[in-house]
Image (tube, rainbow, N blue to C red; front, top):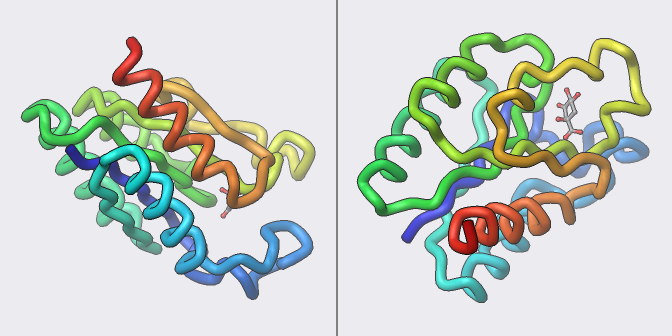
Length: 150
Ligand code: DQA
């Protein structure tokens, strides 16, 4: 059984981008953390990052099909700035009924007002905000419990 971790725009810069906000951990480090968490849980991790909205939509549709086929449990998703802009990502998640845990490294609610709205939250199974990169591990754990324990 697989689980997906998708990352949106600029998260490839993690580690060097505004370290006072996002920390110094790189996205490769995040992938390693997620891989360890999944190994312990007997899940196969598929990890991706894209700066392109359309690529993220394609991945969500593919993940939705894998969940429907019983081969995956869902996705952890940090949509980056597309969180605050993308009706298309909202519709993709809703359209394929993909269980998604939305993750934000920073606490978006104590930042600028334009980060307070999320188009993804209304279609998310759960949300993890403000715990740094550890939020990815919490989200994987939460998703697994939500899906396997009902
Ligand atoms: C982010 C928060 C977003 O507002 C921002 O555009 C990002 C990262 C976070 O993980 O804290 O790119 O999703």
